[in-house]
Image 1 (cartoon, rainbow, N blue to C red):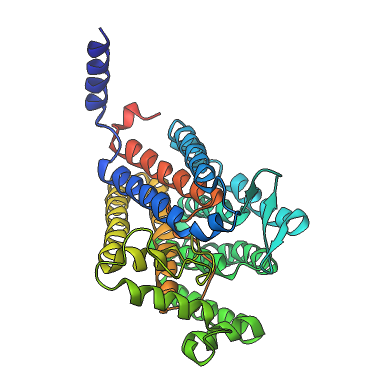
Image 2 (image 1 turned 90 degrees about the vertical axis):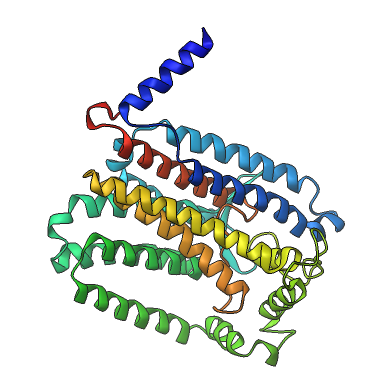
Amino acid sequence: MIATTFQARRQAKAAAGYQGPDRWLVGSVAMLVLIGLVMGYSASISLQTNGMGGGILFRQLIHILLAILVAYAVWKTPLKFWEVSGKYLLTIGILLLVAVLVVGIEVNGSQRWISFGLFTVQPSELAKLFMVIYLSCYLTRKHETLGEFKTGILIVGMVLAVYAVLLLMEPDFGSLVVIALTAGLMLFLAGIRFHYFLGSILAGGVTFAALIWFSPYRMERLLSFWEPFDDPYGKGFQLVQALIAHGRGGWTGAGLGESVQKLEYLPMANSDFLFSVIGEEMGFVGIALILSLFTLFYWRVFIIARRAEQTGQLFAARLAQGISLLVVLQAMIHAAVNLGALPTKGLTLPFMSFGGSSLVANLMAASLLLVVDRDSRVKPGRRR
């Protein structure tokens, strides 16, 4: 009886054109989460030996469970709900960024977290996703007038400016860079005029250069990036330790749990510098595996976005493009920082770094991609 019921459901899905979630996408995300759980726990060993990390693995397992529950709720929500909720989610994102400035707690000179006693929330992680959803809604509604300066650049620029001011007040320069790059590429893929796109790149470049030039702290970060070994125990300490970690790892790594740099040499080893711990313990082979999984993720999302656009589902296509850019750009910047290719920034590795806010936001984003995949493969008359 049960087998007959499941068979009937499968036949109904097949008739509708949908045969279940994209296995490659689900598999790549699941692998990243599982490897992140193992490597993040390994990277947290210094916290445990100091008596600060008791239960850190348990907390991350709770984060994973919570993220899966949120992802399931998103999966059960029709795509149309997200299409009409963009401006409301943007408002929530702005309010969260304001709230962290009012009631947030300061850690290492940045006020990025709101404490609720037993747990903390990092609003910028959700705010980034909400911005992508809003832009997807906006670019869908205005797709016929994106060639105009007001519609294609000005309004989006004003919204980004609000986010920029709030993020810089925390400060969270890394999240601002990710959001700005994602928004710019979403506009380009949506079809704004090329000279507007070039102009936005120039304006963004000048703005970021000014933010660095007039901020002594950011200027120090930039200078230490160019010559980290000039001050290996001061401004260049983080980058030097990250490079040492990769050097020790070599081709095949020092072995799981055998990292030396995570023993209080490498700061934020289970989040901002997790990629370096992976490089030290798993070597080039481990790094190649992680980058391959993110490449697989991007490839599957590219196929999903293209299918959605081919079937006339513009919002679904824009959303898939935006989420893929958000995730992959942050992963690329995280890896580049850990490899010394970019100045040090406090960004997590999507799906892998320890922390509840990042994981919830990322699995929520992955679930939205599965919703897009589902709706783009279901025949028009059967969509929810």
